[in-house]
Image (cartoon, rainbow, N blue to C red):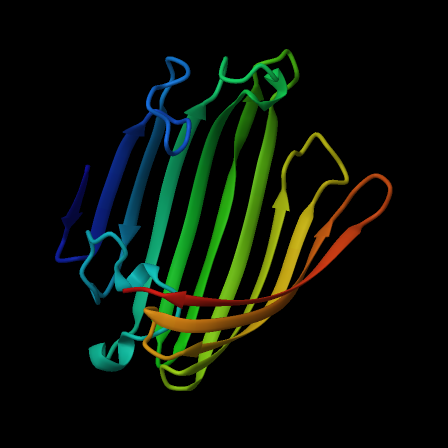
Length: 214
Protein backbone atom coordinates (compact mmCIF):
# COMPACT_ATOMS: atom_id res chain seq x y z
CA UNK A 1 0.00 0.00 0.00
CA UNK A 2 1.17 3.54 -0.66
CA UNK A 3 -0.11 7.06 -0.72
CA UNK A 4 0.77 10.74 -0.89
CA UNK A 5 -0.19 13.48 1.57
CA UNK A 6 0.29 17.23 1.82
CA UNK A 7 0.72 18.34 -1.81
CA UNK A 8 3.53 15.95 -2.71
CA UNK A 9 5.41 16.57 0.54
CA UNK A 10 4.78 13.25 2.31
CA UNK A 11 4.71 9.73 0.98
CA UNK A 12 4.08 6.46 2.83
CA UNK A 13 4.61 2.86 1.71
CA UNK A 14 4.10 -0.46 3.48
CA UNK A 15 4.34 -4.06 2.33
CA UNK A 16 4.03 -7.66 3.47
CA UNK A 17 6.06 -10.29 1.59
CA UNK A 18 6.91 -13.97 1.88
CA UNK A 19 10.48 -12.92 2.61
CA UNK A 20 12.43 -15.61 0.75
CA UNK A 21 13.45 -13.78 -2.41
CA UNK A 22 12.46 -13.78 -6.07
CA UNK A 23 11.16 -16.71 -8.17
CA UNK A 24 9.86 -18.66 -5.19
CA UNK A 25 6.37 -20.09 -5.62
CA UNK A 26 5.78 -20.80 -1.94
CA UNK A 27 6.82 -19.55 1.48
CA UNK A 28 9.49 -21.73 3.09
CA UNK A 29 8.40 -20.97 6.66
CA UNK A 30 5.35 -19.43 8.30
CA UNK A 31 7.06 -16.03 8.76
CA UNK A 32 6.82 -12.91 6.63
CA UNK A 33 8.90 -9.89 5.73
CA UNK A 34 7.48 -6.53 6.83
CA UNK A 35 8.54 -3.25 5.24
CA UNK A 36 7.52 0.37 5.78
CA UNK A 37 8.88 3.66 4.45
CA UNK A 38 8.00 7.34 4.82
CA UNK A 39 9.46 10.21 2.78
CA UNK A 40 9.36 13.98 3.33
CA UNK A 41 9.98 16.44 0.48
CA UNK A 42 9.80 19.98 1.97
CA UNK A 43 9.37 21.91 -1.28
CA UNK A 44 7.14 19.37 -3.06
CA UNK A 45 9.36 19.66 -6.14
CA UNK A 46 8.53 16.41 -7.92
CA UNK A 47 5.52 14.05 -7.88
CA UNK A 48 5.77 11.37 -5.23
CA UNK A 49 4.03 8.02 -5.36
CA UNK A 50 5.79 6.83 -8.51
CA UNK A 51 7.88 3.67 -8.86
CA UNK A 52 11.08 5.67 -9.30
CA UNK A 53 10.49 9.38 -9.06
CA UNK A 54 13.08 12.05 -9.85
CA UNK A 55 13.94 12.27 -6.16
CA UNK A 56 15.13 8.65 -6.11
CA UNK A 57 17.35 8.59 -9.22
CA UNK A 58 21.04 9.48 -9.29
CA UNK A 59 22.34 12.55 -11.19
CA UNK A 60 20.55 15.89 -11.57
CA UNK A 61 18.47 16.00 -14.74
CA UNK A 62 15.47 17.73 -13.18
CA UNK A 63 16.27 20.95 -11.30
CA UNK A 64 17.12 23.12 -14.34
CA UNK A 65 13.52 22.82 -15.55
CA UNK A 66 12.09 22.98 -12.03
CA UNK A 67 14.05 26.08 -11.06
CA UNK A 68 14.40 24.85 -7.49
CA UNK A 69 16.28 22.12 -5.63
CA UNK A 70 15.05 18.63 -4.94
CA UNK A 71 15.50 17.49 -1.36
CA UNK A 72 14.01 14.31 0.11
CA UNK A 73 14.67 12.64 3.46
CA UNK A 74 13.22 9.20 4.22
CA UNK A 75 13.03 6.63 6.98
CA UNK A 76 12.47 2.90 6.52
CA UNK A 77 11.88 -0.24 8.59
CA UNK A 78 12.28 -3.90 7.72
CA UNK A 79 11.81 -7.10 9.68
CA UNK A 80 12.46 -10.49 8.10
CA UNK A 81 12.44 -13.76 10.03
CA UNK A 82 14.32 -16.54 8.21
CA UNK A 83 14.15 -19.05 11.05
CA UNK A 84 13.76 -22.71 10.02
CA UNK A 85 14.48 -21.90 6.35
CA UNK A 86 17.88 -23.48 5.67
CA UNK A 87 19.58 -26.57 7.09
CA UNK A 88 22.59 -24.39 7.95
CA UNK A 89 21.22 -22.78 11.11
CA UNK A 90 23.85 -20.05 11.07
CA UNK A 91 22.15 -18.49 8.04
CA UNK A 92 18.72 -18.51 9.69
CA UNK A 93 18.57 -14.97 11.05
CA UNK A 94 15.76 -12.76 12.25
CA UNK A 95 16.67 -9.25 11.13
CA UNK A 96 15.17 -5.97 12.32
CA UNK A 97 16.63 -3.02 10.42
CA UNK A 98 16.13 0.75 10.31
CA UNK A 99 17.38 3.17 7.64
CA UNK A 100 17.56 6.93 7.22
CA UNK A 101 18.45 8.22 3.76
CA UNK A 102 18.46 11.47 1.79
CA UNK A 103 18.71 12.85 -1.74
CA UNK A 104 19.64 16.39 -2.79
CA UNK A 105 19.92 17.82 -6.32
CA UNK A 106 20.49 21.32 -7.64
CA UNK A 107 22.19 22.92 -10.65
CA UNK A 108 23.98 19.79 -11.82
CA UNK A 109 25.04 18.67 -8.34
CA UNK A 110 23.55 15.59 -6.73
CA UNK A 111 24.20 13.89 -3.42
CA UNK A 112 22.74 10.88 -1.69
CA UNK A 113 23.51 9.02 1.51
CA UNK A 114 22.07 6.53 3.96
CA UNK A 115 22.67 5.09 7.41
CA UNK A 116 21.34 1.65 8.37
CA UNK A 117 21.42 -0.05 11.73
CA UNK A 118 19.64 -2.95 13.34
CA UNK A 119 19.69 -6.23 15.23
CA UNK A 120 20.06 -9.79 14.00
CA UNK A 121 19.07 -12.83 16.04
CA UNK A 122 20.44 -16.24 15.01
CA UNK A 123 18.17 -19.27 15.23
CA UNK A 124 20.95 -21.00 17.15
CA UNK A 125 21.67 -20.22 20.79
CA UNK A 126 24.30 -17.67 19.70
CA UNK A 127 23.89 -14.16 21.03
CA UNK A 128 22.06 -11.45 19.18
CA UNK A 129 24.28 -8.92 17.46
CA UNK A 130 23.99 -5.41 16.05
CA UNK A 131 24.85 -4.48 12.48
CA UNK A 132 25.30 -1.07 10.87
CA UNK A 133 26.54 0.69 7.76
CA UNK A 134 26.49 3.99 5.92
CA UNK A 135 27.50 5.59 2.63
CA UNK A 136 27.77 9.05 1.07
CA UNK A 137 27.86 9.68 -2.68
CA UNK A 138 28.01 12.84 -4.79
CA UNK A 139 28.17 13.76 -8.47
CA UNK A 140 28.54 16.91 -10.55
CA UNK A 141 28.00 17.58 -14.26
CA UNK A 142 31.11 19.06 -15.89
CA UNK A 143 28.99 19.42 -19.04
CA UNK A 144 25.25 19.67 -18.33
CA UNK A 145 23.47 16.33 -18.69
CA UNK A 146 26.45 14.78 -20.52
CA UNK A 147 29.74 14.37 -18.57
CA UNK A 148 29.56 13.78 -14.82
CA UNK A 149 32.20 13.09 -12.19
CA UNK A 150 31.24 11.18 -9.05
CA UNK A 151 32.69 9.89 -5.78
CA UNK A 152 31.50 7.50 -3.10
CA UNK A 153 32.57 6.34 0.36
CA UNK A 154 30.92 3.73 2.57
CA UNK A 155 31.45 1.60 5.67
CA UNK A 156 29.78 -1.55 7.00
CA UNK A 157 30.12 -3.32 10.34
CA UNK A 158 28.45 -6.73 9.87
CA UNK A 159 28.54 -7.59 13.59
CA UNK A 160 29.43 -5.68 16.74
CA UNK A 161 30.42 -9.00 18.37
CA UNK A 162 33.07 -9.81 15.77
CA UNK A 163 36.20 -7.83 15.23
CA UNK A 164 37.94 -6.81 13.19
CA UNK A 165 35.38 -7.25 10.39
CA UNK A 166 34.61 -3.75 9.11
CA UNK A 167 34.28 -3.28 5.35
CA UNK A 168 35.05 0.07 3.70
CA UNK A 169 34.56 1.22 0.10
CA UNK A 170 35.96 4.25 -1.72
CA UNK A 171 35.36 5.03 -5.42
CA UNK A 172 35.73 7.71 -8.04
CA UNK A 173 33.88 7.67 -11.34
CA UNK A 174 33.24 9.31 -14.69
CA UNK A 175 29.86 9.01 -16.42
CA UNK A 176 28.79 9.81 -19.98
CA UNK A 177 25.07 10.23 -20.70
CA UNK A 178 23.91 10.01 -24.30
CA UNK A 179 20.20 9.88 -23.50
CA UNK A 180 20.10 10.36 -19.73
CA UNK A 181 19.56 7.04 -17.92
CA UNK A 182 18.17 5.38 -21.04
CA UNK A 183 21.64 5.23 -22.63
CA UNK A 184 24.78 5.86 -20.60
CA UNK A 185 28.33 4.63 -20.04
CA UNK A 186 29.87 4.58 -16.55
CA UNK A 187 33.48 4.11 -15.51
CA UNK A 188 34.73 3.90 -11.94
CA UNK A 189 37.77 2.82 -9.96
CA UNK A 190 37.62 1.87 -6.30
CA UNK A 191 38.94 -0.16 -3.43
CA UNK A 192 37.08 -2.51 -1.08
CA UNK A 193 38.93 -3.11 2.20
CA UNK A 194 37.86 -5.89 4.58
CA UNK A 195 39.32 -6.16 8.05
CA UNK A 196 40.26 -9.68 9.21
CA UNK A 197 42.09 -11.13 12.18
CA UNK A 198 45.09 -11.82 9.93
CA UNK A 199 45.20 -8.31 8.45
CA UNK A 200 43.33 -6.17 5.95
CA UNK A 201 42.26 -7.66 2.61
CA UNK A 202 42.10 -5.13 -0.22
CA UNK A 203 40.43 -5.58 -3.60
CA UNK A 204 41.01 -2.94 -6.28
CA UNK A 205 38.28 -2.72 -8.92
CA UNK A 206 38.06 -1.05 -12.31
CA UNK A 207 34.58 -1.22 -13.80
CA UNK A 208 32.99 -0.01 -17.02
CA UNK A 209 29.34 -0.61 -17.81
CA UNK A 210 26.73 0.51 -20.31
CA UNK A 211 22.99 0.83 -19.70
CA UNK A 212 20.49 0.76 -22.56
CA UNK A 213 16.76 0.98 -21.78
CA UNK A 214 14.17 0.65 -24.52
